[in-house]
Length: 148
Ligand code: 9L3
Ligand code: MG
Image (cartoon, rainbow, N blue to C red):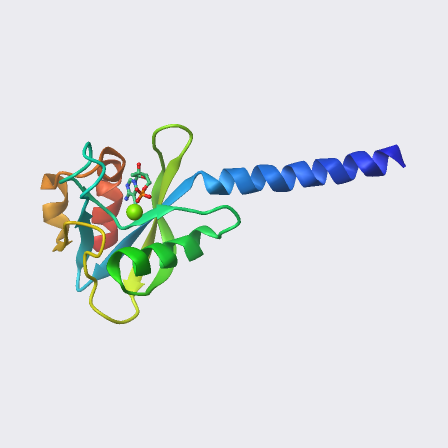
């Protein structure tokens, strides 16, 4: 009897840990069209304003990372995307968060900078010269491989 209670508690704890782990992921989209990658320029916070990143944001508690990515692209770009494979490794962010990038393609519509300064489409050769956020810069080689 006591054993069963312990097993149940441990299962609940494991589920809660999984929830917390998922909540620490920030997802980003590597949207490719005609051999170019979509990047967006941040307008906030002030420390990041003017720097470039892949679209995305935090996974909410209980949300699947790939669902979060679709939601973020609608919020930030006004368009739905189809999500593919992860690109490169998880990259550590501040605190205990990680950035996880997925390949993506536009399902329809033209992306617009709804929450950012601008969007632009970059060729593989242009990627190293962009003023990326530090975590996104780590992924430049993996993104070049994706484009080539
Ligand atoms: N972040 C870094 N690179 C990215 C994204 C989408 C996000 N490509 C970092 C910036 C913030 C944090 O993750 O510190 C949460 O992102 P957001 O919710 O401000 O987009
Ligand atoms: Mg965001």
